[in-house]
Image 1: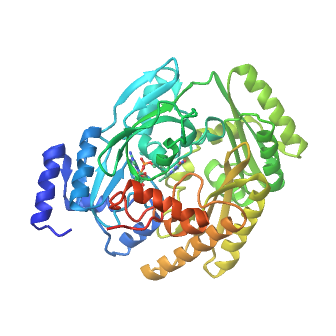
Image 2 (image 1 turned 90 degrees about the vertical axis):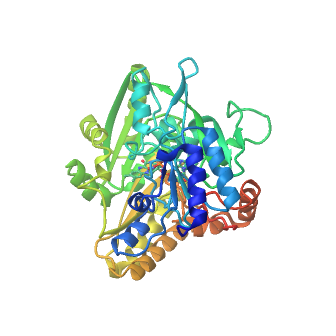
Image 3 (image 1 turned 30 degrees about the vertical axis):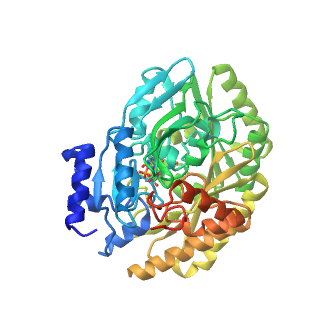
Length: 480
Ligand SMILES: Cc1cc2nc3c(=O)[nH]c(=O)nc-3n(C[C@H](O)[C@H](O)[C@H](O)COP(=O)(O)OP(=O)(O)OC[C@H]3O[C@@H](n4cnc5c(N)ncnc54)[C@H](O)[C@@H]3O)c2cc1C
């Protein structure tokens, strides 16, 4: 939007809603809000290309203010982009068409902790780590530990369907949420039913979980808590091959045990990443298993897990490597171990049932290492979020010397993502397990959903007929 009379009118209307201090049009701030952790906008900025910046950044403090911002945006026909911590990796908050960034970080109040039902009600902008610390003081935990908890918000956890390190026991964000307040595109403030389990018609709570700001702004969340476990113990095993490790994980989960962690690294990750980050010299597929809760359950659970793993020739390495892994679990994602420009990389993760996951792993490994051989593309994987029916694969490609030209880089990046995603889809996987879609994967959504996709678009059109909510994301057609 050019800085003309209309720009000034909108700016002043925003001042009227949130106050003068809570509207920013500063150039430096607009630049910061033009990207998240998605590599493509970062490459674009790194190569001095033009990024689309938001026109306004606003910091509301209540649902009513959010509602008034929506109404204003609708009246003027400009986009609105809900913004949590900006730690997303899929371009979810990137303002592709400019507009108003609604930064929710001032909406960071804990409204109620119900120690009887073990739930917390909070505003969406609360920092994940701050929420966890406040709960810990009461002997409680959210038990959602993403590697980004230092910067991500509660709203971002839910809006992007996130997953924490202990999701195997405690569930993903969508399993934890009880109810929400949402401001619709129209500005209407609605609430889902107070509990997620009922027989009062379809549960539209889940419609907003994972909606990535395309259907409304989430303004309040009630989410399940857990007591801090009495004990948390780890063990570790080394399998000759990832296949045996996968079978061990499958047996653990289908026997309905509830380990808090199973993290299985393929041999490439074990021999390089695990060695580099944890200084563990392991050859084969390294697995960390954890159990927490009452000491008696933990002892029994760890004993059964031990039996399963050793039956499959897993060599027990003991608790120390497991404890060490837990202590350093986030080191993988931060300097000096994190991947960063000028490298080209991506987490091409997916999830599938147990009968399909190994074939997906092999297919993607082949696509990356063979189709992109000329670029020396590397493939590494671990399996980290386990379900009663299957498991997610957290796999990555890495090219240490990608093309420098921005267009060539973008072309290569798109080709890799297209091929990797289609290898997942072809073998029964989905586009993503817990990072979301954003605009990184939006262009593949109709291939994922097939004939169900027009129905998804109908829902979007019904809730947001003018297409103002986070346009360009989740693959929805942009309505003007
Ligand atoms: C180093 C690193 C490690 C990571 N590790 C993990 C991990 O272990 N597990 C995991 O799940 N993810 C991980 N992520 C990805 C990211 O942190 C998560 O997706 C996180 O949940 C995003 O939260 P956020 O508050 O930063 O959201 P943002 O990036 O601000 O937003 C993400 C999307 O949600 C929408 N949104 C945000 N708040 C609201 C709201 N209140 N209402 C409506 N829409 C909203 C935005 O519009 C956007 O589309 C990682 C990222 C990084 C950089």
